[in-house]
Length: 264
Image 1 (cartoon, one colour):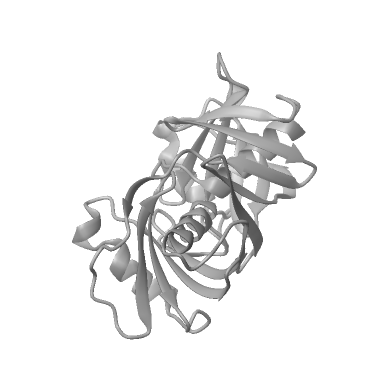
Image 2 (spheres, one colour):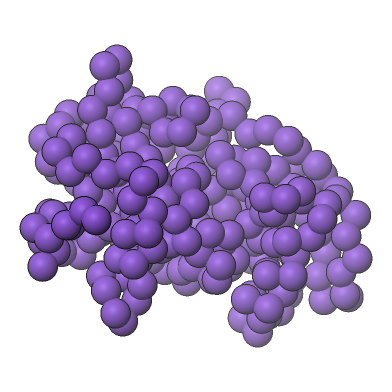
């Protein structure tokens, strides 16, 4: 069994979506370490986070990024991508603007101090109506993949909705296949402003912020003719901004370095 003692890390937050980032050019972590990732993400008994980011060298681009949810599953992550870009500049791996490989997609980002503007990969798998039966307080805005899948539901009861209970039920519905989906609950405050709460698969609970969820919600609201870009999204962890340029979506917001540490 590997000894992880002495590994250095950064604890980062993208509007409350928090991550443990390892400079994997030397750490040598991989999918074979998912049990370790699950342990270190546990709150109150370890560092605690929504997931683990691995920053790696790449032969063609500035770096490669990998992300593992708190349950050990590997996926993409919008706020994780912003935090990875921030860390790459901070650690001196590259300078802004940056281009990097994340999963099967190429990302680009501008890093200006704490502010990170991320160019998202193209959306796919758009379904403007899924056809699920929802009670009268909710109406579906549709489904789209913005790097990971999202089902978006509109409600006026955004502050009182039981995100964990309802999100868990919708997340695993058979219509979304065996991998399920993330679920976003949104309230339209204005044509250019949304309040949003997200149930994230892999974390299996509500997170304070979800970058791909913000992009999905803004995109589907605009598709429904109920909003316009640029759009401001109020998450429980802070404010994110979604915009569109030349047919591509951008996610922008601040990244906070919480602390740097070493494992005992």
